Image (tube, rainbow, N blue to C red; front, side):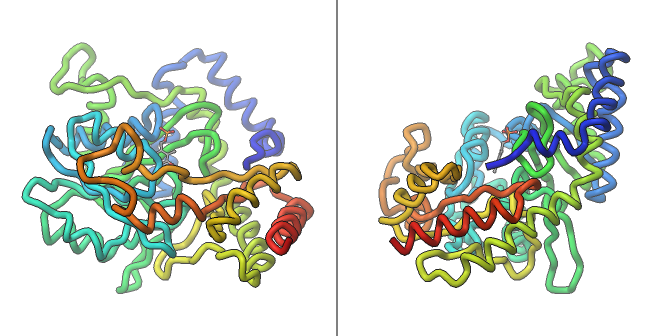
Length: 370
Ligand SMILES: *Cc1c(COP(=O)(O)O)cnc(C)c1O
């Protein structure tokens, strides 16, 4: 699905030098590179960035910083990675699922208002597979009902959302708080775990910084209950190098997606990804849809030809044992349930060659016409 070794090999001298500087300085915890990275990503996004240990922690810290309390309801798409729902449940909040749009795979904004109750405190849109949820109408709903918005940007770092007045904002900087992940296979990935929280508001950013650091502004003085969630200096050193290439990496992912579009778009057995009108796509995943009875056959056949694919996600959250609620069952979220049986994500990364893309497209054509 990804080729992290080849990507590393392309920039090895720079990466090795940056990591060696950390090794010789031994400032492994909260070292110089961490501050540099926070500033660098902050400049790229035009916001305040607080690095942390991973994208799941980023979501948890965001919810802690907004003082969400047990019993508060948080609205999120049901078609997402478990982390989004997990931290809500972990904090004693109530996850309130909303189905997604079958074309963009993102939260169906038209279904949000019906889920709002007096206990609703926040909406967590997930910019799935690399393009933004429809943030303009979502922000209008949030403003009307005084709700916080936490954007899960783990899959869409670098995507731009365009508002109807023509103004543009980067994913993660539109709502109250944004969160992201630097898991190795994410668009900006480090060599282990990493994450960050994004907040436009300076005071909120400071509160987040304190929560991520044991609730302390001054060492051994704990004003609030916090957590220990840090980005390692070594990971920050890697990210400082890779951040310089993010624009180029996004362009390479888009080039691979364009190749797939061109070669798979005409097949009537496949639906290529639909581009949202008001968002750029950074193609964290290139996810196609097939007929239900062809999806698993396709996966298996491609596997036999040495082509990895992934199903994001095979079991919808509302049907997972940990998140089953009274009344939920098959049929509760029909779009998500259908997607769990029809989506399949193809290899997409920064090192795909035309030869590899051609091999993959030919294999898909052959399998689906057989
Ligand atoms: C990867 C991911 C996360 C979690 O990130 P980690 O760094 O693995 O904790 C959260 N949400 C979404 C949508 C993700 O894809």
